[in-house]
Length: 600
Ligand code: NFS
Ligand code: SF4
Image 1: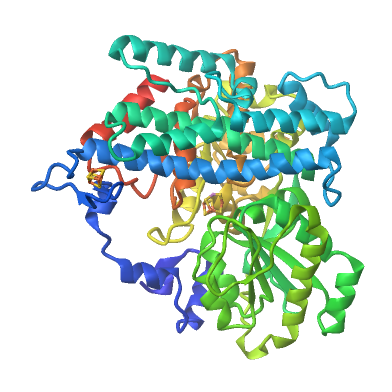
Image 2: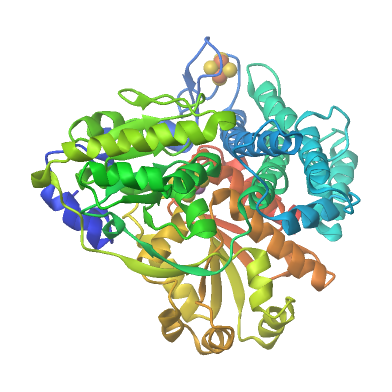
């Protein structure tokens, strides 16, 4: 695959042409191709050691007797559970941090948005006329209970945020399924950790073999993410770090500086990235950078932690998933600092070809050939300082002959939390709803998810977005899609001009681009919340609204979890590449027809 076929991004195409001697994700994809077709269809099982088993025309059953329907469904549920685990473990860290701030155990973080704290507390049904830290402790307590409660009732966060019609729909579905099948099948999640654990229990050898029962557990687990873990992560992060406000930022690899110490933060949890951003602007750090001949410190983001600090602090973003190796290839990165998720283990080896320090920080994520600097929330200032000093020390080792920063940047308007959006609309959702009723806006599509080298980088993200806005469909979204759209210049006001006439009119009146950055992947919960608010306003259900979701270049199990909770919440979803389900016609039908039907 040549550079031209790999990406639509000019920065990446240029870099790939001059950096052919370094191995990248595309080369490794080439050497893995063609992929095993059993894996692609989802019909291989390694869940016990009588196997591994794979289903084909010749061998229709695994050693235990499991057929393709069981095996495919089990694999889907395991993928969902893993995705939910990632988002929810992220949420847990934020909930624990909020509790520590409230108790005074952690002095390195504080509450940046007391208004949001009160709003969240109110939503959870708590009495809000209290001292701030007392309220913070109560909110953190509710969050932690959602991880540990053993009763059969649904998550408190879910019950507090989901529109009543949707909640009723799920309760009815549970009842009807019991009546029709005489089998108890739950949809409402009870406790985030429990649903993940139960998914693993049910899919181990010899437990649940009914594809419908399995997939419904997948749905339940995904709801523990969308209306549980992810939503909690978003809300509590807004409390600690501030609710995003609309602002302009720069994107793409051109945001790296030729003269400053470049620190790239990659991963997911703003607990680390916010601290690095804060400490990097400290005069003492600036002074140290000048001492080694640099003109200062330049912090930029990659992937979703990039989205977090871009939304809240206006930090430039160097790129999305497929930029992580590219950033190192520029030869201008002093430190690539990572926490958890979407970080290629290839980075350690690649960084060794340059002066770049590849710094891992999380006790949950260690990497070959990384320099591990253990991050401790309670000692965050000091650890952040140490990380930045390590980057500064690497600056004199930069080899000027190896430096190749692509001269590409794009401006983007970002920061659309629901709060910011409602402010822009003049305080209520009325103008948006009126535009939808009048037909100026024909619908809203939420595009999310990753890059995947199997798809030309950013091609589906950008073309799908353009085709939708031309047809008067407002596009909102998160994750690596949002970075793709920002890099392609689609989040500028000028994009109004390529929109359909109705959408153009609305966006001009509101002074917004027709392509809206709503944050990181856990912030898909902002979209759910927006959908819920629209439904609530109209006293209807989410499934009555003209909303669709898409992850057109998805990669991770987290995207599988997101897709599932969107569908279960009443929003049809498009995914590309095809998920590994085609080995079971029963599962394909359940996912593409039955679940869609029953969640309508
Ligand atoms: Ni979402 Fe974000 Fe990007 Fe995909 Fe990874 S960074 S959490 S999973 S690759 S969008
Ligand atoms: Fe094979 Fe059944 Fe074991 Fe899976 S659980 S590996 S299908 S024997």
